Length: 460
Image 1 (cartoon, rainbow, N blue to C red):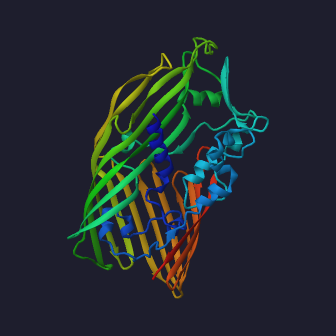
Image 2 (image 1 turned 60 degrees about the vertical axis):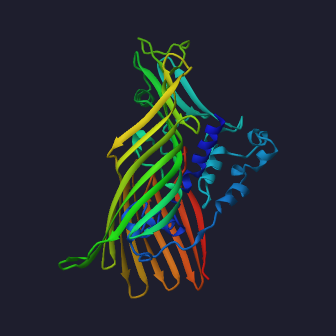
Image 3 (image 1 turned 60 degrees about the horizontal axis):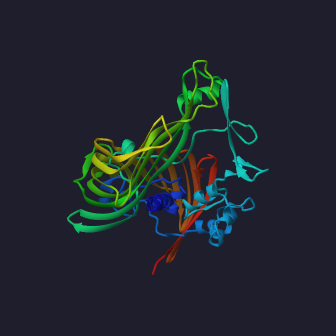
């Protein structure tokens, strides 16, 4: 189990590294402009000319490490002197603050997520109170204020939702084979998600403050994570130009990519714990909780995973305007074997056995993006937008204004909550410097977190 937790910790901590957005992109709320760097989302971009809409040329500075060291709430170093240094009532350390900053290593978070909203100042510990009364149920903080039970970290994704679609890679190493062919190797660790929500009956009871007879009221926990190795083989090329009346000549690019993966670790959990009302619509205080659900996991030496998928894409560019559409997992297969724990509602002790998760079919992830370059009397303006669907819908719009060596950027978007970005850059002789103000939704507590990102590029 220790190895399993270590692998999950890797998936948790490294999940934010996959396809890391450059600081230029962050300044436009995460907008992905047409470029070869978007080939993972649309394989046709592997043949697209680089630099048409600029590029992220700098090395991202991991200034999030400053947040881990300088902020007592997220600094884990006192644990070197004993774990009790983090858990005693006088310690400022906050695990939620640490998680939020650790998961954004290239951003210094100004107001990271904090569990202080749930901390009782009399005890110094987080408190969530669940009151089961004869005719109702209340879930509150220590002051008696109702709290939102739809809590979550990341987005739970597994074979049941994303099928053969592996998480974005932590890193990918490409190799050109010539003749428009390429090969790439990658390591992925992500797909992490942890969600807690009431079942429909409990949600209704919280809204109406009343209970129904012979009804089970439960909290549902969903979780997922996976890690593994991938190898991709792709082909991308430019097709003959297409003349369009009254518009000009359009340049077309197409691409396809196949990816196979070998899974190292996998987690998929779906469980609930609840209580049952009697025929009079009341709780029996002597009734034990009802446990239901399952936990399926794979780790090295106890199961494995493998699969393959096919991606396709197309891009059209004409007179400075580009539109691209990529479809990942146009056809895919995935199979994981491992251990499954099941709770049947009669006992808190699980039933253990061998398990399997598999899928085959068409469960695509779509990515559409577009951009145009507008020469102005003074300077140049690039405007773009993207829209995608994977496990949920996301989209961004943004732009960059260039005047000599100076760059100014801004963008708006939605991806697990509203986001915006502001950025600025300078491209001097032999170096580039970029900065961005970013936002994301805080895990669990849900407030908007602001961050600062920097990158530096040097040319010789």
